[in-house]
Every structure is written in C-alpha cells, then in structure tokens.
Length: 209
Ligand code: AP5
Ligand code: MG
Image (cartoon, rainbow, N blue to C red):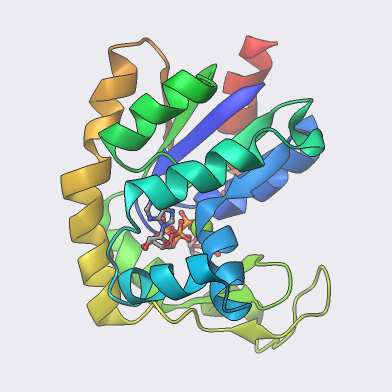
C-alpha cells in the first residue's frame, strides 16, 4: 500500500497519518518531521533547510527528493508507506512517479478560514511529533502517548502560517489536478471530527485492498 496524503497546512495530514499508519501497519513518512529532526541535530540537511522552513517556504526539491528516495527503500516500508507532506510540487510528484508511484492519494479538504485557527492553536509533542490543539488539551502540557513536552511549532505563528498557505495555493494545490488526471485522487472532508475523517480515509483504503 503506497499512499500519499495531500492537504493544506493544518488540514490534518499528520493527525490522520498517525492513525492510518498504525491501523494498516505501514510506515508514516512525514518530510516535515524528518526535516525538523535534522534541524534539531544540526545536520548539513537541517542547516540548509532551516531558513526555508522558518519563512514558510519550501525546501528545494532536490534535497527533499533525495531524502524520500532513500527513506522509501528502508526495511519498514516493505508493507507500504504513507507519505505526509510529500510531494509538494509537480517536480516532486514526477520524481516520485519515477521512484515508486503511489497507489492512491487522499486529499484532505479543509476551508482556508479554519486552517489559521487550527495552526496557531496547535501544540506538538517535542519527542514523537503527535499534534494536539489547545481547545481540547484542557491545560495538559505533556503528550498522552509518550509523555514528551508539548511545544508551539516555530512556523505556527500567524505571519508564517500566512506564507505557508500562499505557498500551498501556488505550488502544492496543482497536485490535485496532477493526480486527478491519473485517476488517483480521493477527496476526504477534513472539516469533520477527527474520528469521522479517519473513518472516511479507512473507507478509501479498504477499497484498495
Ligand atoms: P509540514 O510539517 O509538512 O507542515 P504542513 O504541510 O504545513 O502541515 P502541518 O504539519 O502544519 O499540518 P497537518 O496537515 O499535518 O495538520 P495536523 O494534523 O498537525 O512541513 C513544514 C515545512 O517543512 C514546510 O513549510 C516546508 O518548509 C518543509 N517541507 C516539508 N515537506 C516538504 C516538501 N515535500 N518539500 C519542500 N519542503 C517541505 O493538524 C493541525 C491542527 O489541527 C492540530 O492542532 C490538530 O489537533 C487539529 N486537527 C486536525 N484534524 C482536525 C479535525 N478533523 N478537527 C479539528 N481539529 C483538527
Ligand atoms: Mg503535519
């Protein structure tokens, strides 16, 4: 099962990807999480990526494609993988089609007006990356899964979120048409409750098996 999960910043890609990867026993590959780990560890990739990410811009295609090309060959991808946040440009989608074309694409659709609130109120686990929202945390400051500290992501400020949404519209949204032309798009209403969105994703994925 080779799946791509598409959606604007804050659409709920990470939230759904964690659940899907667990249920279907496939590897969850979030390019955003991998890049943030590289920034934390101050690797050459992290040092190159940081400026782009802090400004809400995309990291250059060649760097991200090389990262994914290596990642999908690993042992834990034998049963399949779920790409969260990749591809994000037509060039990345074309590169993926050469390496390992996806079987299906889930497009999590959420109106832009909801995204700003979701992102500025988001908290993420510093250890495992699990996303939360201040509206449902009831004051909790640690991750319910691994007890890691919950932090505010550096690019979740109002200003940077604005830049990320513009980048999505200009560079990533065209991927919907790209995959539509290949008959691979499955739209999912991302404005529903988390468990309802998950059920809709499972319905699509069950149809593939
Ligand atoms: P990345 O980490 O991928 O960020 P993003 O695409 O902007 O998406 P987010 O992680 O912000 O949102 P999400 O859709 O995962 O939402 P979540 O589930 O957390 O990328 C960051 C940066 O890295 C990029 O800007 C770029 O610089 C770089 N990068 C990464 N990949 C790249 C690539 N391929 N090429 C180039 N550069 C790349 O949910 C959001 C919030 O909403 C949470 O608070 C959550 O609790 C809440 N929520 C989720 N679902 C629901 C729901 N159904 N109802 C109510 N609330 C919900
Ligand atoms: Mg995410």
